[in-house]
Length: 220
Image (cartoon, rainbow, N blue to C red; front, side, top):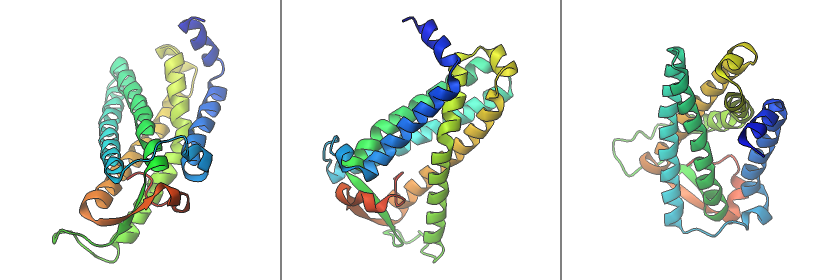
């Protein structure tokens, strides 16, 4: 089957393809927390490897923030091809993120925030931990909510011409929502990563206990 044929088939079923990809994405992430049989597919990781993956994930997300911001800037200035390249790159970075995140959680574990620090300049105010939890919660909610709208915007963008996107699809409206939620989620993810891994102390929960920590520190 040719690439053009596949594109045409997806083009006519953009909504259905989005639903399918969303279910696959939710299933993969949910599986590493809740399904022992799925967790068992991943190798056990050392604490050092888990930390390395956490740093790599933060780096990937930081690059994604840059590419998303550039994509937004370019489309506002009418540079469609640059915008398409930036957004395609951003989506590719999502796949890289998943390739790092799934084995990290399933085979390694997660961290929990501790309101203490090795640095005298880091504030230990009582509201820091609640603020951390609020940012983490918003990050998680946006990450979940953004999945279908991001996928829909990407599917439309990859299967329609520029003229079709402007005149025949909701790509502009959906893309604006997707990029806003996606960008804020990434920024909050990086901020909570810095707090958890660098500014403040943390405790570590191995993969076997991760299912009890579903909302805890999934990004860090």
